[in-house]
Image (cartoon, rainbow, N blue to C red; front, side):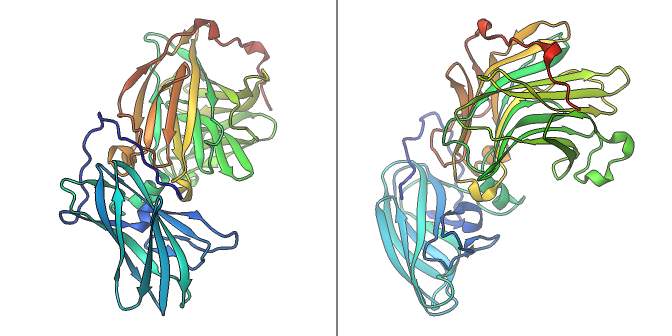
Length: 430
């Protein structure tokens, strides 16, 4: 196991301490621990209140951030239902063996030294047990006499923060549109670097005021292209949407499934099971155009840039809407809490828009923002900015190279990279 750490950037703002008393912190495992190694048939995992821990092949990793070098005393709040257990706690190459039994609620693990600020990873492994489980741990206690030490972690489940915190921070790029223009098309290119595509990742390329369009990792062998448009009727239950407010599917490409969706607003969603690959650049084209009858039609095409192909994902009609393209943005999120400790990264390059008169406009600026998990200091592993002539987004993995939110980034223009698209030849679907 390795310790995730590096020098923190000097420009980082101070973090609010989460101390129950000076020099003492209680880190709830339900919001800060992950099952980072397991046997194939193991039923171990992270529950809402404590860990399920019976398999000697399991490793639970607890993450938190310290703002300076420090000496830390660690203990584990846990019940031991029967007998005694031996466990191992490690931080990098520092390893502690501890005995747990039913006579105590708090079990001292020992002392570790941290030589620089950054994110720390404490691994818990079971060695031997007499009962059915090693223990039922609830929190990792940290004490320190280091003056001024501050820790950052998910402190409580208020606002369902154990769920959101374990998912990790979501980050966004907001692209300014040319003023005074009715924008009909948005184009961008997306590359996910190899090894930066764990399960639960949503790499959203072309977002707009009423929906989003990107690629997801749904499972070990399942990947999607996803295009969704929200209904103007506000509900998380699609069954509640009146007929006159429903998003209608006008067309879809081969192999595409179109359906209603909910739980994050509701509307129309299309998905294409497609084996996209990390390291390959894909291009996204989205059209937003009023139909002149009080509705707006949204269309999305997707393709492998090197192959030069386009395929229709879907075309939707959103009622009670009269708009051109607005709210152009990209984002990166993890929707699977069990994989929130894994890093993901996306490169967003060659971003353009085309107005209703057929003129292309290059987008060379972006504003970097984060969600409440980032802004609240619950998780600090987020970044975005300039990379390889375009923009990038990064989250997860408990890295230390954090980028300040709300910055604006300007890339170098590349007018020769303007998209060359035969709009008359774009597939129309069925």
